[in-house]
Length: 111
Length: 109
Image 1 (cartoon, rainbow over the protein chains, first blue to last red):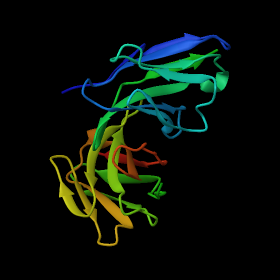
Image 2 (cartoon, rainbow over the protein chains, first blue to last red):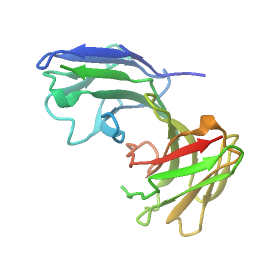
Image 3 (cartoon, chains in turn brown, orange):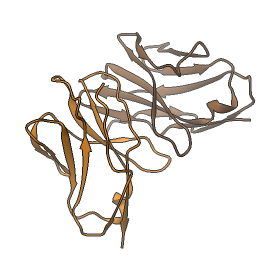
Image 4 (cartoon, each protein chain N blue to C red):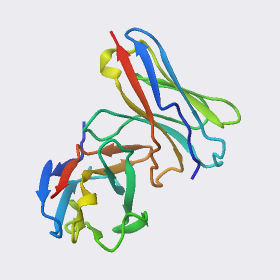
């Protein structure tokens, strides 16, 4: 079965540092998403990406965040200057309607 | 996007059928109803999607009444491994998926 791969599985970073979370979505999918889940809370939408551009973003996705698809396969989420409250699981998903496939997530810990 | 309401938690025993109901009073004409399952520290996993009436796959059934203002996910003969959070989502095809609080299902021996 095809799968979405995320790296790293766990990242610890100091407050104020930049982090890049990486995702390899399923190759023939057209829709890509980033979500986050703070421990014990619900899954929150960050951004959706279609046709090589952002199609929708949430209020959480402010100027500190950016997404890229640098080489046509990888899909990255960059957080420019991390804050303590950015600590969460970050999930990448790709979608071939109707089903969205989620990766295993990256656990980001900001200290 | 239509807001969804579902029970916060449910308990069941192995071998029982579990029905989780979700209400979505403001569902739009082009909205589909989709259910996802999430285990701790894992990404959500697609279970089933429907538009109206009944849909069945190897894992679950989804019942949708004619007015589409609610839906019921039915899990036949649950096992301990079905303990998870179940999310009901409503939205159009290709659009963002908005997760609510979900229903935490606990299956006991």
